[in-house]
Image (cartoon, rainbow, N blue to C red; front, side, top):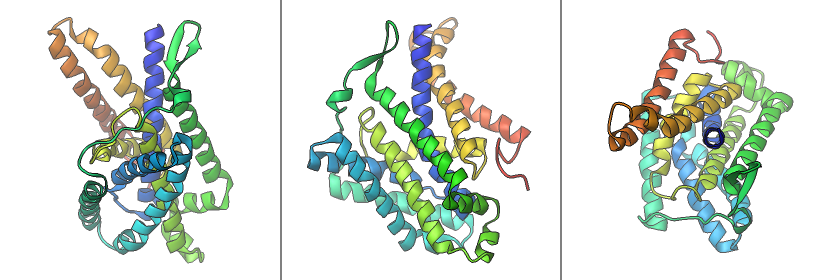
Length: 304
């Protein structure tokens, strides 16, 4: 039971990290009708910028806080210089152009930080365990990720539901042409949305850095899961992205934890350990297929 609780918490932690990445991506695709394959590169850039600023300030908290506006600025610049020229293009052109951005950012990182991976140490005050329940220890840093992710999710829900910017975001997700006809500055709205998405991606990247290495291409694999999440949740839906991320996180982590023991009943231990992660990934895609058959627009996507 204790082991199950720990794995569920790990699934929540992964789900919240995925939500941060998927939230920006679903807003970008839902409002701007932009297929942005380079969103994972912003995840990577957030981690590298945080690594640099943490080293300069010698403080994890200060470096992380400074990395967020830096990532926002990066997102705004990328939107103004490259992305803005793609709005009127078809999705194939957007895919090719943003794939080019992936290559650009990978080479930029190689030039600025070198090909070797970097590591960010867990801050000393979080480099310990806490008791979730009596006798059930859990790494404090992972629990901090859950708290920060939950706080950001609550703030984002408030932003979308209770503010004028959120009203425009919701209206844009439903009908982009309508908000343009009402005199809203579309370019400014798109810049803010893209910059906000960059902040969420960068935050996910810097928080995951002490757990995983900071390396070139680190956002490419996780981008696939983020795309699956927004398809399941519904394009343009923050609530859908959150629920889908939670479900996908549980399937991935709990599956990896418990499938090996189940598979050992009819295969070797080494084969079971190798097959479990692949089966967990397959289950995520099966879930996506089932949702699309049942509701093609996703769980909370707008029906057309």
